[in-house]
Amino acid sequence: MTMSEEQLRVKGAVVRPFKRGDEARIVNLLNLCFGEWGTVQKWHKLYLQYPDFEKGDVFIIEKNDEIIGYEGLLFRDLVMQKDCELRTVSLRDAAIHPRYRRRGLHAGLLEMMLQAAKSRGADLIFSWYLRGSSLHAHSKAVGFVEVKQPAAYMKVMKPEKVLRSGLLDLLHKSQSLSRALQDLDSELIFRFGKFEFSVTELLGEAGKKSAKDQEKVEIILDVASLVTLAKFRNMSKRQRLKCLISLILLRKAKIRFSSFRALLNLAQKGLVVIGSI
Image 1 (tube, rainbow, N blue to C red):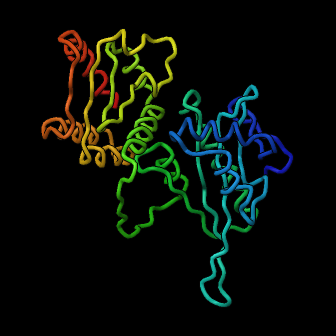
Image 2 (image 1 turned 90 degrees about the vertical axis):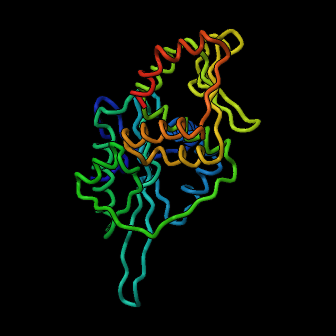
Image 3 (image 1 turned 90 degrees about the horizontal axis):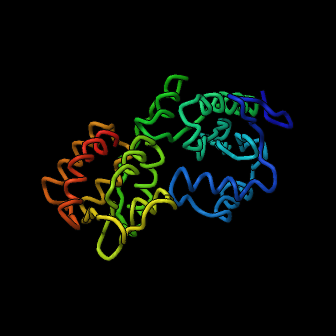
Protein backbone atom coordinates (compact mmCIF):
# COMPACT_ATOMS: atom_id res chain seq x y z
CA MET A 1 0.00 0.00 0.00
CA THR A 2 1.39 3.40 -0.96
CA MET A 3 0.18 6.91 -0.27
CA SER A 4 0.39 8.35 -3.86
CA GLU A 5 -2.88 10.21 -4.56
CA GLU A 6 -4.94 7.91 -2.37
CA GLN A 7 -6.35 9.17 0.91
CA LEU A 8 -6.65 6.58 3.66
CA ARG A 9 -8.94 6.97 6.66
CA VAL A 10 -7.80 6.17 10.23
CA LYS A 11 -10.07 6.71 13.24
CA GLY A 12 -12.15 9.28 11.40
CA ALA A 13 -9.11 11.21 10.14
CA VAL A 14 -7.55 11.33 6.67
CA VAL A 15 -3.98 10.17 6.08
CA ARG A 16 -2.38 11.80 3.05
CA PRO A 17 1.00 12.76 1.59
CA PHE A 18 2.56 16.23 1.79
CA LYS A 19 1.39 19.03 -0.48
CA ARG A 20 2.72 22.55 -0.90
CA GLY A 21 1.29 24.87 1.72
CA ASP A 22 1.46 22.29 4.55
CA GLU A 23 4.85 23.46 5.82
CA ALA A 24 3.75 26.03 8.42
CA ARG A 25 1.08 23.76 9.92
CA ILE A 26 3.53 20.85 10.06
CA VAL A 27 6.08 22.97 11.92
CA ASN A 28 3.40 24.26 14.30
CA LEU A 29 2.54 20.66 15.24
CA LEU A 30 6.22 19.71 15.66
CA ASN A 31 6.83 22.74 17.90
CA LEU A 32 3.74 21.87 19.95
CA CYS A 33 4.85 18.26 20.44
CA PHE A 34 8.61 18.73 20.83
CA GLY A 35 8.94 22.24 22.25
CA GLU A 36 10.81 24.61 19.91
CA TRP A 37 11.46 21.99 17.20
CA GLY A 38 12.41 24.70 14.73
CA THR A 39 11.29 26.78 11.77
CA VAL A 40 9.82 26.27 8.31
CA GLN A 41 13.31 26.92 6.93
CA LYS A 42 14.64 24.01 9.00
CA TRP A 43 11.86 21.76 7.73
CA HIS A 44 12.67 22.72 4.13
CA LYS A 45 16.32 21.88 4.66
CA LEU A 46 15.60 18.49 6.25
CA TYR A 47 12.85 17.44 3.84
CA LEU A 48 12.21 19.43 0.64
CA GLN A 49 15.92 19.99 -0.02
CA TYR A 50 16.89 16.40 0.75
CA PRO A 51 18.19 14.85 -2.52
CA ASP A 52 15.83 11.83 -2.54
CA PHE A 53 12.77 13.61 -1.17
CA GLU A 54 9.39 12.54 -2.52
CA LYS A 55 6.01 13.88 -1.42
CA GLY A 56 4.99 10.35 -0.46
CA ASP A 57 7.81 10.23 2.10
CA VAL A 58 5.84 12.56 4.38
CA PHE A 59 2.73 11.18 6.08
CA ILE A 60 0.13 13.62 7.41
CA ILE A 61 -2.95 12.84 9.49
CA GLU A 62 -5.59 15.51 8.99
CA LYS A 63 -8.96 15.99 10.63
CA ASN A 64 -11.35 18.88 10.00
CA ASP A 65 -8.57 20.71 8.08
CA GLU A 66 -6.23 20.45 11.09
CA ILE A 67 -2.95 18.53 10.92
CA ILE A 68 -3.05 16.26 13.98
CA GLY A 69 -0.34 13.75 13.10
CA TYR A 70 2.92 13.64 11.19
CA GLU A 71 5.96 11.48 10.42
CA GLY A 72 8.53 11.34 7.64
CA LEU A 73 10.72 8.76 5.89
CA LEU A 74 14.34 9.41 4.95
CA PHE A 75 15.99 7.00 2.50
CA ARG A 76 19.73 6.36 2.32
CA ASP A 77 21.80 3.82 0.41
CA LEU A 78 24.42 2.24 2.64
CA VAL A 79 27.38 0.86 0.68
CA MET A 80 29.05 -1.95 2.63
CA GLN A 81 31.55 -2.88 -0.09
CA LYS A 82 31.75 -2.72 -3.88
CA ASP A 83 28.93 -5.15 -4.67
CA CYS A 84 26.97 -4.89 -1.41
CA GLU A 85 24.50 -2.03 -0.99
CA LEU A 86 21.69 -1.76 1.54
CA ARG A 87 18.64 0.45 1.12
CA THR A 88 17.95 1.99 4.54
CA VAL A 89 15.15 4.24 5.75
CA SER A 90 14.81 6.27 8.95
CA LEU A 91 11.51 7.20 10.62
CA ARG A 92 11.63 10.88 11.53
CA ASP A 93 9.74 13.38 13.68
CA ALA A 94 6.80 11.23 14.81
CA ALA A 95 4.18 13.62 16.23
CA ILE A 96 0.56 13.22 17.29
CA HIS A 97 -1.37 16.20 18.63
CA PRO A 98 -1.86 15.85 22.43
CA ARG A 99 -5.67 15.88 22.04
CA TYR A 100 -5.59 12.79 19.82
CA ARG A 101 -3.05 10.57 21.55
CA ARG A 102 -3.71 7.02 22.78
CA ARG A 103 -6.29 6.40 20.05
CA GLY A 104 -4.15 4.15 17.86
CA LEU A 105 -3.43 6.84 15.28
CA HIS A 106 0.33 6.34 15.26
CA ALA A 107 -0.01 2.56 15.18
CA GLY A 108 -2.01 2.82 11.95
CA LEU A 109 0.38 5.42 10.57
CA LEU A 110 3.42 3.27 11.32
CA GLU A 111 1.89 0.31 9.49
CA MET A 112 1.37 2.45 6.39
CA MET A 113 4.93 3.79 6.58
CA LEU A 114 6.42 0.30 6.85
CA GLN A 115 4.41 -0.79 3.81
CA ALA A 116 5.56 2.28 1.87
CA ALA A 117 9.21 1.66 2.83
CA LYS A 118 8.93 -1.99 1.77
CA SER A 119 7.40 -1.02 -1.58
CA ARG A 120 10.44 1.19 -2.25
CA GLY A 121 12.88 -1.60 -1.54
CA ALA A 122 13.99 -0.81 2.03
CA ASP A 123 16.28 -3.45 3.54
CA LEU A 124 16.67 -1.88 7.00
CA ILE A 125 14.43 0.54 8.92
CA PHE A 126 15.63 2.66 11.85
CA SER A 127 13.60 4.53 14.46
CA TRP A 128 14.57 6.71 17.41
CA TYR A 129 11.48 6.61 19.61
CA LEU A 130 12.15 7.47 23.25
CA ARG A 131 12.66 4.49 25.54
CA GLY A 132 9.65 4.03 27.79
CA SER A 133 7.28 5.91 25.47
CA SER A 134 4.19 4.32 23.92
CA LEU A 135 5.83 4.69 20.48
CA HIS A 136 8.87 2.77 21.71
CA ALA A 137 6.69 -0.02 23.13
CA HIS A 138 4.64 -0.32 19.95
CA SER A 139 7.70 -0.35 17.66
CA LYS A 140 9.09 -3.30 19.65
CA ALA A 141 5.72 -5.06 19.40
CA VAL A 142 5.84 -4.89 15.58
CA GLY A 143 9.39 -6.24 15.33
CA PHE A 144 11.88 -3.44 15.98
CA VAL A 145 14.89 -4.47 18.08
CA GLU A 146 17.12 -2.19 20.13
CA VAL A 147 20.62 -1.69 18.74
CA LYS A 148 23.30 -0.97 21.32
CA GLN A 149 25.29 2.17 20.57
CA PRO A 150 28.50 3.65 22.03
CA ALA A 151 28.03 6.00 24.99
CA ALA A 152 27.09 9.55 24.01
CA TYR A 153 28.19 12.66 25.91
CA MET A 154 26.60 16.08 26.09
CA LYS A 155 27.40 19.57 27.27
CA VAL A 156 24.60 22.04 27.90
CA MET A 157 25.33 25.28 26.01
CA LYS A 158 21.99 27.06 26.46
CA PRO A 159 20.57 25.83 29.78
CA GLU A 160 17.47 28.01 29.63
CA LYS A 161 16.46 26.58 26.24
CA VAL A 162 17.15 22.99 27.35
CA LEU A 163 15.01 23.49 30.46
CA ARG A 164 12.12 25.11 28.61
CA SER A 165 12.14 22.53 25.81
CA GLY A 166 12.32 19.59 28.23
CA LEU A 167 9.42 20.86 30.34
CA LEU A 168 7.31 21.59 27.27
CA ASP A 169 7.92 18.06 26.05
CA LEU A 170 7.00 16.57 29.44
CA LEU A 171 3.79 18.64 29.70
CA HIS A 172 2.60 17.74 26.23
CA LYS A 173 3.24 14.04 26.81
CA SER A 174 1.43 13.98 30.16
CA GLN A 175 -2.05 15.45 30.03
CA SER A 176 -2.63 14.41 33.67
CA LEU A 177 0.38 16.51 34.72
CA SER A 178 -0.89 19.50 32.73
CA ARG A 179 -4.30 19.23 34.39
CA ALA A 180 -2.75 18.92 37.86
CA LEU A 181 -0.66 22.05 37.30
CA GLN A 182 -3.68 23.94 35.97
CA ASP A 183 -5.54 23.12 39.20
CA LEU A 184 -2.83 24.68 41.38
CA ASP A 185 -3.96 27.93 42.98
CA SER A 186 -0.35 29.16 42.99
CA GLU A 187 1.74 30.18 40.01
CA LEU A 188 4.63 27.74 39.50
CA ILE A 189 7.79 29.46 38.24
CA PHE A 190 11.06 27.85 37.15
CA ARG A 191 14.26 29.84 37.61
CA PHE A 192 17.79 29.21 36.37
CA GLY A 193 20.15 32.11 37.10
CA LYS A 194 18.54 35.23 35.65
CA PHE A 195 16.28 33.21 33.38
CA GLU A 196 12.71 32.40 34.47
CA PHE A 197 9.37 31.33 33.04
CA SER A 198 6.03 30.14 34.41
CA VAL A 199 3.97 27.01 33.84
CA THR A 200 1.09 29.25 32.78
CA GLU A 201 3.30 30.55 29.98
CA LEU A 202 4.24 27.01 28.92
CA LEU A 203 0.64 25.81 28.92
CA GLY A 204 -0.53 28.92 27.09
CA GLU A 205 -3.39 29.55 29.52
CA ALA A 206 -4.76 32.91 28.45
CA GLY A 207 -7.66 32.77 30.90
CA LYS A 208 -5.68 32.11 34.06
CA LYS A 209 -4.87 34.94 36.46
CA SER A 210 -1.56 36.63 35.82
CA ALA A 211 1.42 35.78 38.03
CA LYS A 212 1.16 39.19 39.69
CA ASP A 213 -2.29 38.30 41.05
CA GLN A 214 -1.30 34.87 42.37
CA GLU A 215 0.72 33.31 45.11
CA LYS A 216 4.03 32.07 43.70
CA VAL A 217 6.09 28.92 44.08
CA GLU A 218 9.58 29.19 42.59
CA ILE A 219 11.65 26.15 41.60
CA ILE A 220 15.29 27.28 41.55
CA LEU A 221 17.64 25.00 39.61
CA ASP A 222 21.41 24.67 39.25
CA VAL A 223 23.51 23.06 36.50
CA ALA A 224 23.48 19.59 38.10
CA SER A 225 19.69 19.54 38.39
CA LEU A 226 19.34 20.83 34.82
CA VAL A 227 21.38 17.92 33.41
CA THR A 228 19.23 15.49 35.42
CA LEU A 229 16.00 17.03 34.09
CA ALA A 230 17.37 16.86 30.54
CA LYS A 231 17.40 13.05 30.94
CA PHE A 232 13.81 12.95 32.23
CA ARG A 233 12.23 12.01 28.92
CA ASN A 234 14.19 8.72 28.84
CA MET A 235 13.23 7.73 32.40
CA SER A 236 10.38 5.64 33.72
CA LYS A 237 7.86 7.24 36.09
CA ARG A 238 9.55 5.60 39.09
CA GLN A 239 12.96 6.89 38.03
CA ARG A 240 11.57 10.41 37.65
CA LEU A 241 10.13 10.38 41.16
CA LYS A 242 13.41 9.12 42.63
CA CYS A 243 15.33 11.86 40.81
CA LEU A 244 12.96 14.58 41.99
CA ILE A 245 13.20 13.46 45.61
CA SER A 246 16.99 13.26 45.31
CA LEU A 247 17.25 16.76 43.80
CA ILE A 248 15.17 18.25 46.62
CA LEU A 249 16.93 16.39 49.44
CA LEU A 250 20.39 17.29 48.07
CA ARG A 251 19.29 20.91 47.62
CA LYS A 252 20.08 20.79 43.90
CA ALA A 253 16.57 22.06 43.28
CA LYS A 254 15.34 24.64 45.80
CA ILE A 255 11.73 25.66 46.42
CA ARG A 256 10.84 29.20 47.44
CA PHE A 257 7.33 30.30 48.47
CA SER A 258 5.98 33.83 48.17
CA SER A 259 3.77 33.30 51.22
CA PHE A 260 2.60 30.76 53.80
CA ARG A 261 -0.60 30.38 51.75
CA ALA A 262 1.45 29.29 48.75
CA LEU A 263 3.17 26.69 50.94
CA LEU A 264 -0.18 25.32 52.15
CA ASN A 265 -1.55 25.16 48.62
CA LEU A 266 1.43 23.14 47.38
CA ALA A 267 1.23 20.88 50.43
CA GLN A 268 -2.44 20.17 49.66
CA LYS A 269 -2.10 19.57 45.91
CA GLY A 270 1.57 18.74 45.52
CA LEU A 271 1.07 14.97 45.82
CA VAL A 272 -1.35 15.03 42.87
CA VAL A 273 1.23 16.89 40.78
CA ILE A 274 4.06 14.52 41.75
CA GLY A 275 1.89 11.48 41.14
CA SER A 276 1.12 12.62 37.59
CA ILE A 277 4.74 13.21 36.53
